[in-house]
Length: 417
Ligand code: URA
Image (spheres, rainbow, N blue to C red):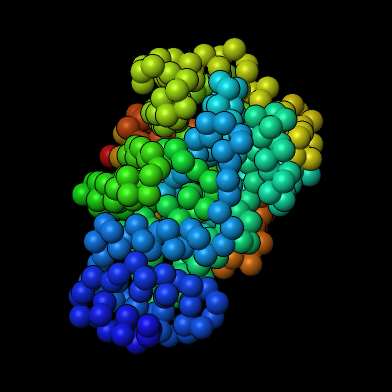
């Protein structure tokens, strides 16, 4: 087999065989296929597409480019994934709830890149919390307390790591077959047989419209069918940030407030109920979506989900006293109120703009190696559709740099009509 023939075949819009796809993925992972050859093939895929069988073959080849975990000894593990968003702290709320309902949670999460946040960064804002466990520790934690939440290991789908970094430099990220295979390869390598995927749709998501979100969802479900995994996709809105907080430590504050039952705003309630009920159904812990939703809300109000979160933090070396006494967290130097410039209804709080500004404040990273500042970001008191009065505080900018805070303030992120 020859990589030039494979590139030419896709360039000419022909279907690749499983063997050809495996040859490419294996060769690229080992460095035998060069970056420029991989770029040519990825661009040909971007332009000419792939059918469901090709996408499944690409997914499985990438999943098997490194270690594939076997979690069968842990019971009915159900994984959860989001296609990305702004203020997306759903994993941190939902996974302790699910674990408190007796479903083993063995979850590997990613870091944030660009305008989207990452669960691992959020957890690392808790002093001492370890996300770099060995696979043995990962499994042992699930056996001991029913939940472990760590970062992806270096050997998890290494072909996807290389291909994703390449796609980022050749304008080939926003492509449904490539996104579907990238996500599903990591889920399969992480040992999941049952997966619920939050397919986000809107300005702060990869999928900007419903038609594309539908396509991505149906391809990922089809990959599941063809690879013997049960996949349920749930679509959620990402036109405005999720909940009140955007920024790593600030999102932990919000997670704790919710798990403590202090408040549960409608957008988050909707997402955790929809995703969680489907997870419980897959784990055979609920007989209907309605029953699943009820169980989820119950375990917030009875404190069991919060107890599980504290147990998770302590078990991974985190200082749980920070969670019990949130005032211990160091705050950003400047907490600047955003006020309403006129009375009326909020018609827009754009997730993409907020995500970019949060990254500019230091909450996100441009490159994988960049450091992030856990303290900075936004806290929103008001959201889209709220009626507000002129001069009213709509939210706060948390910044460590005054000039940056003033720049963000000048951007008028709330549109009022
Ligand atoms: N998330 C991923 O893991 N991969 C993509 O290609 C896009 C979003």
